[in-house]
Length: 511
Ligand SMILES: [Zn+2]
Image 1 (spheres, rainbow, N blue to C red):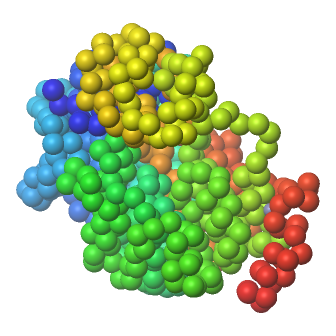
Image 2 (cartoon, protein in one colour; image 1 turned 180 degrees about the horizontal axis):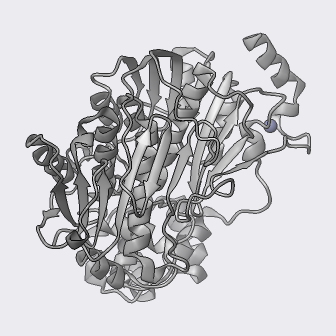
């Protein structure tokens, strides 16, 4: 067995995008898949190194068998180090010599057709431009900008996923050859000539070191041309199930503060790293500093986003992953542009938390019973465990280890961690628990750093629309994917950006 310790969380993520199939089938597909990762001497360039590093960080979290294929890179230590990295992410991973199911290639070398009967995908980059081809080897640029390379690795991982799980996808279309500029966020007008020089990003604040924040810090740690200060605000410690999609996470970090991963990753960065072990509100109170030039939002709930906008930073860059979407939004001009609250205005009735918990435990009719457990934060006892076991057709012994655990913790382990899904071996969909695939979150974080740099360096001639969305399991196509949306300001008058006090406060603060 080489599936990761946190495999149940992978199962949850997979089952959210694949509507057919059950966990037994997904597990068997993964156990029968070998991912070939090939590279040549281009992997020694800065961009190539970044593409290869992120590819391994994405692949090793999900696929249990890897074959590294050295196309004469000329550095014997490379494979040794890549194996070390993959094992640090999944200590049970296997390095095999058998024929790969498919191969992803980094570097301008063709892979012989005899190497695999399956697909061969090439990824490449040139500074801001990410490239992909299912046919032709691609060049790797000479810059120290990791962003095009990082996005190429994410799209490569998406194509691997679509190929491996093709039987379970409605339209498993792979990408055609494309180049995507992160500046224009378009596939035409690709301008590869923009060079990055030394750039001061000033003082930025990253709120949240979850999956998206991991993508952001991965990119930052691979951008040696940047200087400035980043303050990272995050209160939690790393849980086993986080490894499913945190690109910086290794097994050794489990149980430690999430901030530790960022500190280690940025050890050699010229960007000064400040950390705050707490949430946004605690950060503001503790430091009594309410003047943030640029806040990068990498959290996953509306309330905290509203709290950040309410504290009136000058500029906000936001990212989200939901329903098969990667999204970023820009909020640079409070009062004129749509603000972050406009985007997350509470609308209509939402399902109550207790109903959500009851539904996800397959106990829809027992909401009242569940509500009591949550309200009094009771421990999971025989009565609850028996009910859950019966409703999901699993043996009560399998739940024995959770007896005595506070109900929220029980829920987070059993449902959010994907364990219930794995145990019941069925095809029921778990709702309202965000479990994106690793490349989806990583790409959202990389795009956020791209937006920071583009803004600081003034690289966009024209103002972008508020939101850009990418559909990560669909091919990148001119204009349609990524898609830029305008977001109009809230017109109901309820938003803080229509409130005279907030508008004045923003003006006084930043004029
Ligand atoms: Zn607003």
